[in-house]
Length: 109
Image: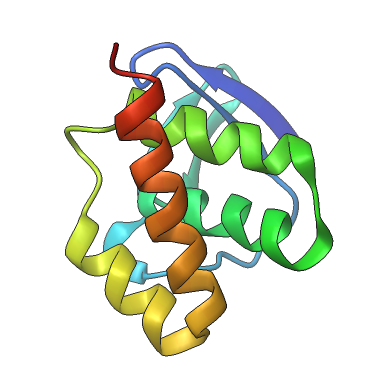
C-alpha cells in the first residue's frame, strides 16, 4: 500500500495493508505528502521484524530489528515489548532479549 521515510523518526515505514497489527495505544498518526495514515508504533514494528527473523529466517528483517532497536533505543518500551513477546511465544521473547543485548554490546561502541 505504501512506503515512506520519516526523517523526524529516522525510520522507513511500510504500510502493507489497511489492518494495523499491535497495540492500538501505540499507533502513530503519520503525516505524509499524500495526507495522513496510522501506523503501528516502533515497539510493534521491532517485534514484527523479529518475528520475520525468527519464524522465516529473514536476515534483512533481523538487520532492521537491530537498527530500529539502536536508533530508537531511548524511546522503546522494554516492559511492553517483553510482555508482548513473552505472551506470544517464548522463542520470540528469547530472540528479543538476544537482539537487545547484541545491540547493546555491538552498536554502542
